[in-house]
Image (cartoon, rainbow, N blue to C red; front, top):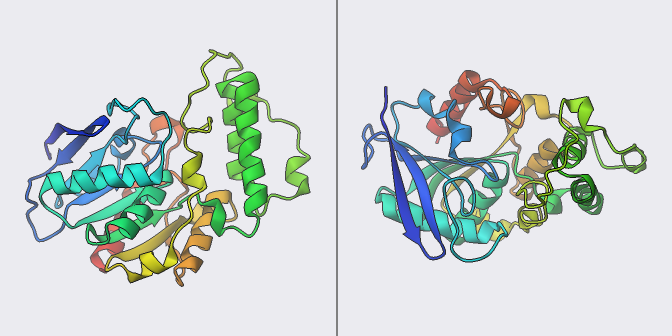
Length: 291
């Protein structure tokens, strides 16, 4: 069993907390494997990381999330700031360049990392990055995002999450039929209708809109020495994040690589969102080794 060591990296405006599984520098000839999400923290990789005992795996809590306490007075989560944090973390590890598995908003951060610090990453596997700009119905996607934000502002977390689930499970482009639907009832998803009065959830507020508003620079990404693989879940087909994965792959002139399960396919039941972590890990290993 690999021992996990937790460290804190003090950088400007935040104490970044990260976990290291395995030796530094890494042994066995593989680069460090960095696993990142957003707004998910390191705990989201507890089912995936143990499948890579032959590699040194690093996870972290992004700035202002989980254990990484901000000191800069800001509440927004931007790919640019998070990429700068990751660059400093990779430097602190002293074992770069690294391989990166990045999911959801973390995949957007990782694309910015490659664009801005192209020598930090050997292989990036970017799993379903939610980028509105790569969609043919980008304006409608922004309207759908505004819909779950407004539900959250009006009635709290349950209402916001119900509307978010409705958006992310919708098949195909956001048409008039989508917007004609009634506001979903949180009880349909087993969620409470109680409102605790908070409005700072990183997923449901506007704090992370810079993630989905990201504008990828195809020139910088294709010029980087990094091997970039866009990944999509086989069960995600037709949904918002599957469509953004296909769109991002098209920007890079490639086809996405299909992974088992869905958007949370590497989860082991955390957050009530079970995937297929063992199968997912096997596919990730294949993709990394192919590089």
